[in-house]
Image 1 (spheres, rainbow, N blue to C red):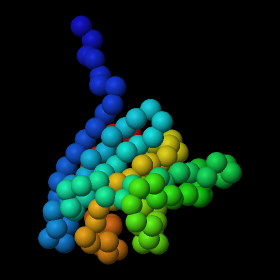
Image 2: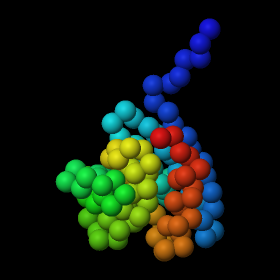
Image 3: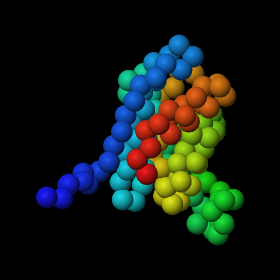
Image 4: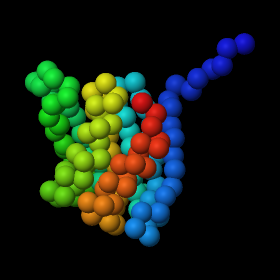
Length: 123
């Protein structure tokens, strides 16, 4: 009997980053990747990170960020691009929906969060 794979693949983990409990949930849908990255236990600001279709070369593609729900702040866009660009590229240029609720958005924390996201890879 063949194994039945779930229609939606999801992985989650928790790690302390700079002393702050950080949870990550990565879920793969057919048309996008959904990532929740929280240090508050809630989804937070919802940001769409989409590859620019005008750029033909995947290695140099540009990305557009758009806050769908939550506070519109420049730092939100910077964090979203830094956290989600590699996911989109590795997932065949699929868009990423990112839920962000961060206490610590320092460069060191963002780098550590990228590693946590990689550990939950579903794409």
